[in-house]
Image 1 (tube, protein in one colour):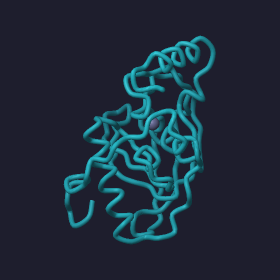
Image 2 (image 1 turned 135 degrees about the horizontal axis):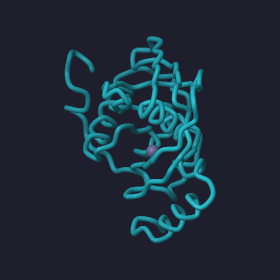
Image 3 (image 1 turned 60 degrees about the vertical axis):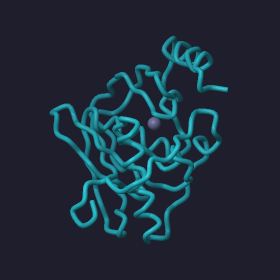
Length: 179
Ligand code: ZN
């Protein structure tokens, strides 16, 4: 990511916040300071995401209420997408709406069928404040929508409806990590 290094190679693995922690339900703050602290946070978020075998991670999942997420996620054509977006905005969402299995590192061990757009575009900036535009489809589009939701204080289970929602919330109630 920086100086050709592998993202997360020099980061620290941070503790993950779990459902029930208010930071996950609080809209994150716009980032205004672009310095070494932000670079360090992004590096730590990559390390944490890889350690947990996730495909995306938002800053409030490591307890920082800041608008940034990282990802390393394939799309449906097996193309790998690796990056980060600071102050992301979901500027386009279209294509068909597909329900597919979705999980979250903040609700470990659970997943539920969740409806998402198949094509999205996210705009924001990089660590250095340079504009970035990320287009995603399929599984990667799902990931981008999931991470944008996190930064607004949302969770995928908010979008799960009917018996699927009842089932996943019952599982949350039974989960060892839930209080
Ligand atoms: Zn998540």
